Image (cartoon, rainbow, N blue to C red):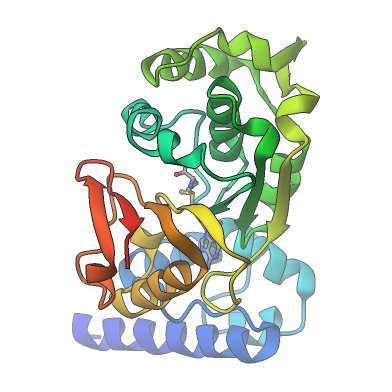
Length: 277
Ligand SMILES: C[S@@+](CC[C@H](N)C(=O)[O-])C[C@H]1O[C@@H](n2cnc3c(N)ncnc32)[C@H](O)[C@@H]1O
């Protein structure tokens, strides 16, 4: 069998599977970049007891539990507290000041994974005297990670790295002010959890929340093709308040988005933009 034939067959099998998932469950993975989708999909079908790629459309449209496992394994959920500390230092320097003029703040973390990013933001807001007026909406497509995020419990072995990140992010206290240790885990304090709502939201198919002052979406769009990225940028554009901030992090850029001119880039390394028109 030639390599081209094998490739074409693989592509066709993936296409059939993603169409079947969309029509049965309404989740739209058709705009995910094909290389990473292929890699994770073939990892999934190689696992013991999972159906082959040819049989998967049949089983996945009939078995809700298999589909839930599929979502959990097909998405990449790696994250950490104060990931890319320089990004948070930049938020402190460039984004915080204008936020004092709002009586209430709405912040959306799209693709929040297990929640560390949203808790980091809340700690930063706390230290800048803005937490009391802020509401954080943290969303993800993956229910399994959202359940972990809601609990706010993480392995103690991460603490060293997270504390270092916190200091490099310009932390003003000690990270230990925001958690309690229990055996081999630590749990975020209630005050840091109270104003965060974790909820399911699919960037590919769902509509937007209300007017946001900050939208943060880091390390998510790299898994989407250009067309889906543009659709999501449009979504963010629509839900941002004029003067609000879109924070993409080091890996993504607005450069190819048709509405790019409405934004002013305020940090070219961490890709932080302000909606100005
Ligand atoms: C690598 S994590 C990024 C976590 C965090 N933003 C960070 O930078 O550390 C990517 C997250 O995007 C989520 N995701 C993937 N596709 C999504 C979609 N269509 N809608 C919402 N979230 C999605 C995944 O489930 C995963 O938790």
